[in-house]
Length: 188
Image 1 (cartoon, rainbow, N blue to C red):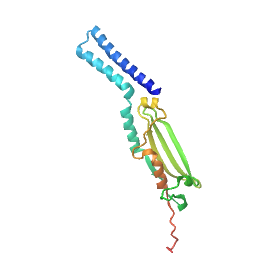
Image 2 (cartoon, rainbow, N blue to C red):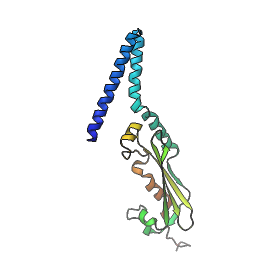
Image 3 (cartoon, rainbow, N blue to C red):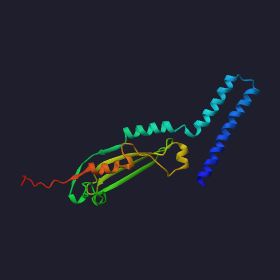
Image 4 (cartoon, one colour):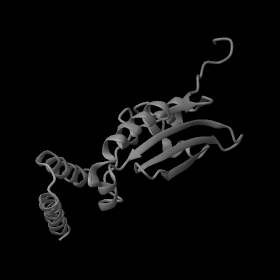
């Protein structure tokens, strides 16, 4: 039903655009405007109808890419050594178990860029005992132009291309924790 509604809305929009261009042509004939000026006015009307649903896609994508390069990624403030029981068999940190000793603080700023529909998401890892912030991972979610963001508000978002599927959060855990060395003092 939604697809049918969208299709009907698209046809209506195209019809209104065609009607506006046609009326501009008729009005230009009545006002005795030159043929070149008439074509320019009609081209301007077409451009306006094309830009209404698409004007923010290119600048929004460029801003999103800029944010990913300049503000996105992992910032490690302190690395901690933990026992091997906090690691999975494949050597990756066991995030569920690590949350026993470290707190995850998540901030999602949905209104970070309302004009370009970009959300800023940050995960910080804090040591529960000392309160020290070990690191922060920042990702941005881009929801497309206003039309896409309006029609699909909970729909598809893109994360920073350097960190597909929000992998920046896993990278943070890997970088703030390392396996405690079991070597006794004196090398014995």
